[in-house]
Amino acid sequence: MLVSSSWFSSLGLRQRGLLLTAAGPLIISPDALLVKLIGMADSQALLWRGLLTALGFAAILWLRCGRGSCPAMRRCGWTGVGVAALFGLSNAGFVLGNHYTKGGNVLMILAGTPLIAALLSRMFLHERLPLRTWLAIGLCLVGTSLIVFDDAGPGSWLGNAFAVLSALAMASNFTLCRTRPGIDMTPMLVLSGLLVAGAAWLVGLATGDGMIVPSATQAGYLALLCLVLLPLGFTLIQRGPLYLPAADVSLLMLLETVTGTLWVWWLLGETPAPLAFVGGALVLGTLVIKALLDRHRERPAAGRGEAAGENC
Image (tube, rainbow, N blue to C red; front, side, top):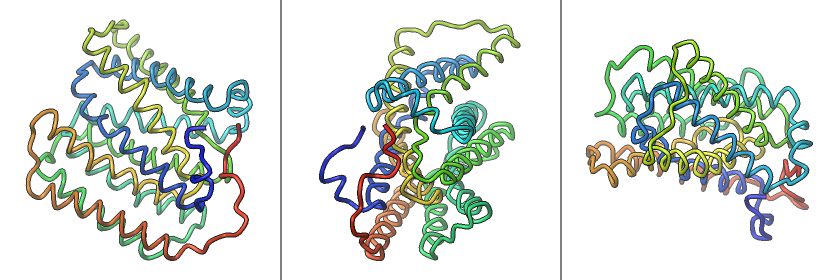
């Protein structure tokens, strides 16, 4: 179990979801930066990313569930297979989007994920979101646009399409998870990594590219990103739909945009434009105010037992 304490268990379900889901984007925030530093060709980047993240997810699953790992995966059923496929599509779309278009375009398109998730949940799950959630989505869209304004542009239609694919797949993933209340879908992230690696290998065969061994520097970045940051961060994020609507999980993922900008500023010396600071403050302020409003309006439920989805 990644988070286990009497204090955590004493929290309401929404508070648990907020803590888990908010921690995930903060952990994976160096993703776009490290993708650029690794600098591998498309199929190679996805092949190594898929293989190593599958290994990292498998290690986390074993630490959480031990010999119950396989039963935990079987409990996910065909819904879990769909979750794995959608997560893999989102992962691939993010990487390829950053390869083929400006990073600002990718982040701006991904900022639409909460809106997509809200619409999908309304259409397929009949979940009604409060007005404050819709307002928060709108404000965060504005804030994210301000953050990436200088780095956005026409870009490549192919890269923009990959970013749209990533946003659609991530929103669909979170919505699909909500169709199986109480079932933890994080074990299926192992399969997702293998699907990404398999698809990248087939593309490499078709294009005549063999497996390229990364340099020592690339291997270090890959190990940090794919064995540690992505498995830990996405395991936390993927647990979000156990506690929160898909739109709220997607909203919290916008924390990655704010903190990712700070990483680039700190490590690469790329000073954000003044508008980026305004946008970051708008996103963070909106998320904090919404969390406080949700907490104020949440009615304490008596006799809450163990967290939903503790299947191991």
